[in-house]
Length: 333
Ligand code: NDP
Image (cartoon, rainbow, N blue to C red):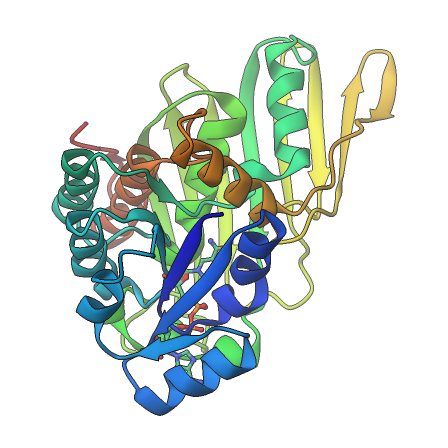
């Protein structure tokens, strides 16, 4: 069984990832927090044996196979590099880092250590997105020409912390949500974004100059164009993902979420039909692939390179919004 240590006593680990590890036969033996009391309380509440504030102590434990990094974004780089150097497999939250150079350094450290390195982009694990990708590969919509992503949500009060107040922690809607759109578009379309234009909004929730909403237009390598709308401020919008091709459209609703819900409709000259898809938990699927990759079977769902690519997209969106210009997506890969 794979033994995990959590770096970061986070909400996402508590809500989804601890359960996904255990559902895949793994164990969680450590949690690290910057605060000793919080670490202990979190460990007790989640059935975790050891709590620490000392990253080195956790990394020195030979029983630890893998770490899950879900601290705030400015901390991912050093923690991931230290973990890789200690020979631990790394599942890191998105955005991998705050700069492309840092993300490259993390992935390089993983490669040098020969460990599995993955980015926790959950949406490509959704049956809905997998069904859309397959439908496109099967030619059901002809040649894809455009995509539209509706990922404007309301940030729950319990999460209205660093995301809306702290630029140095990588707050703001672009690094939080737009990076997921990038990964999902890349996965569903099997295409790469080449350039973006974007306008951000401060709609009254975020402070310190951070955006709490953004609309982006994207050009892909194939010539496809896409638009994305991300927000922390949209209470009633609902989410969705559409791909429009020469012979048909895929119209998905409620699919930019953490749970295996929603529906996908194929609309063509023949009419409309719903696509069936697998409803396994997104994080459960991610952890299954990660455990298999440790065993030498296949790749993690989203690897380090995928994390570099989604970060490159986010940084291009920020630059485009800042300059008012169309900005190329430079990955350095
Ligand atoms: P949280 O705010 O829950 O946790 C981030 C850090 O904040 C923790 O490491 C913890 O620090 C500190 N913290 C959390 N709760 C408290 C509290 N009550 N009091 C004091 N400090 C607290 O963040 P999220 O779980 O929302 O996000 C963590 C990471 O995961 C980010 O990188 C984010 O982008 C990513 N994420 C990814 C998702 C996905 O689906 N892929 C979904 C949600 C988030 P310490 O560890 O020092 O105690």
